[in-house]
Length: 435
Image 1 (spheres, rainbow, N blue to C red):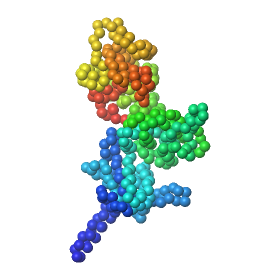
Image 2 (cartoon, one colour):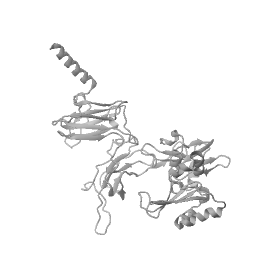
Image 3 (tube, rainbow, N blue to C red):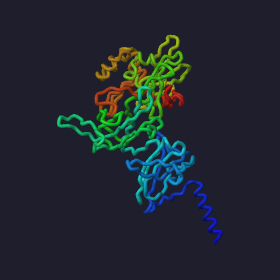
Image 4 (cartoon, one colour):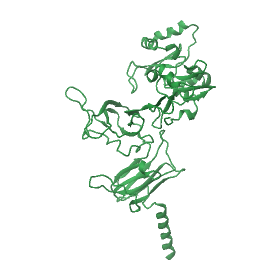
């Protein structure tokens, strides 16, 4: 009997020392509530090797949660082991709690109320969502790139008798999300302060304001489609400090961005502006990298290659190089039309006559031959008509898309094709910080 008591006492001491003093079981207990946590990266893979602490809390006279990290409020810790599954759960008594990342509690807080028998599912630092939902990310910055206060949300649209959108207000009854930011909690939901909200597909009013009180909201209507991600913000790119240029986060997947600069003797920033900037070339999709001895940088629509002898950036023969590197069959699998061999330039230009809208767009570009090269292929599918050129692919849309209307022309993302072809080193593909 004494031996049994000693063993029970030893187990209790071990639990107290480990911090796991709450019940952990896959079977819910009726008088307890269950908290389940999961952490994922931007690809949806579970993250491990971190710890989440759970504390009791209560509201003060103003209805605000009280942050008290004392031992008396400490409930336990959920350890996400390196060889674990990335999902941990615990059963706790009913009441108010806050969850804190053990390494940096001031940067990672979640508040929740637990009810008996209720199963609470909470995602971790990286937002995860079901494919049938859409996701909207929002970030607010000052001109120098630092984070600022913002209040943002999605609303069911309301209109006045004339059909004009009624601006949202803080007491808007149809609001779907609470404030995405709170002063002092800017880094609450992402490494770069990006706040996220999910919603079913449909038409919404998206609105934000950069100050509290009776200030004007900035708002727009957006259509959310299943599984789509939308990046919104008052300032998504800003000037670099280490060298003339600009830092862009639009293609950084909420993990950072890419610098386009005149650093060193490679004047990509100056050339980027000369060649048309974002409107013509798209946003950067990589940092600088070296390919076959030449300094290059990928953008959504083109690859720029630095020519040191002329001191200018040139459009790289992207598709020709990919065909050499991976083969025509690989390009076809990526959705690029098959290349047609023409004997004369007139024959190549005649291909444009198959779609007058694409033809007019091609000739409207100030540097179409330099940027795209001669037409080399044509293709159709139920969603789009495609015109392949030496350096890119034009897409004429037959159905509406979040990024294009019916009849609109866009560029196939050559930068992403180059990534998949293995032309860009992984270190240059990964988003980085502003310089």
